[in-house]
Image (cartoon, rainbow, N blue to C red; front, side, top):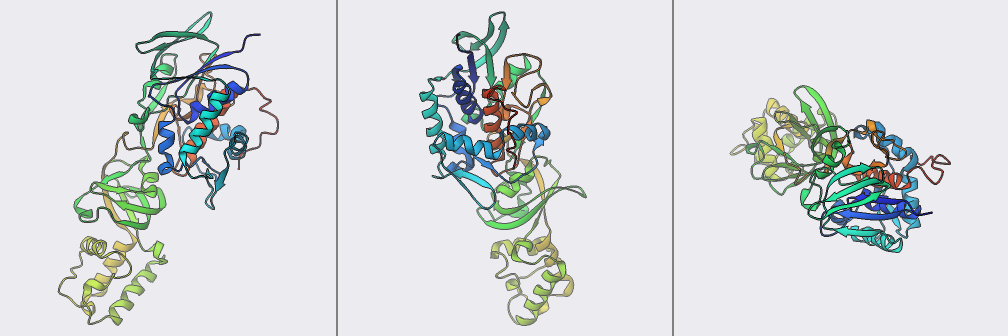
Length: 415
């Protein structure tokens, strides 16, 4: 009996695991990658450290329930087993982030390449798929400037979304699926930096601070996160900022709580500390009231935001109302959002192909038998911390398996 012929479109995280698992089931696999090398985006993940997955449950966005069902079959435990079985040792940190033990993304790609070679998966780079058609013989794949290839028994589309087009994700994979009747949820940048009012942050570029951040839609609270905020010449970056960027719109506000990471949570605690400083440092320059709490240049911006002039004054001259205003700036510094960085700087795409027409068990289309999709091309995205790679790897593995190997048995992998 001839082996099943499978084409995988896209040599990223989902495509590489899909190709390997399909080949391990006995398929004859060809992997098509439009860039000159496979795994370019994978090498850039986690600042080159490659946060493979996360064992701590967090919500997914878009059609998050689809991700939950994928992880029921191919969750963290199963994925860790996959990596160990293929020779990659991993390291789990206290917050649930799982990395290769070498903390190098290149190691992950080396392992995947080795198994592609071992399993005789044919890898074609510089091969941009621009069309799919189905005939009585199977699926046929059109390559830009290279003609048609096929027939294939099945095709797995893992071409990514629109984030970081220079690394291969330019949105072209959407067209392959749209032509087969699938629907697209509008793509937009997620996990990206925010642009803010520049006057409010002037002189702060390059400064890093710990903060609790909250996205405000008028008076309604949106996403919130804790961590390090990086000030840039155009706005704010850092993981906690990027986690709030998904639904940010111009006119929204990102508020920074700078006092909570210092151990002051109640307003009375912050105000009490400022009053203590005023009383002890009575004859000292008022500009030193925030010394030791925040960097001097940040203190200047906060005082400006609070409307409290510090120059030429002594600490004892600060009124109760002025201390209260400084307290408010420390606890809730509002920065108006003017926009966000585009797909070229986003780590992941929000939106994508609607998952309603795909099986979460096989990732096969219910509209076009033999057609599968996995990874970022689908309308699923997660927060920072390995969640997006985990969905890419897990959905790719399931697409490769295609329901084989008794998936229904002992599949309780979701931590």
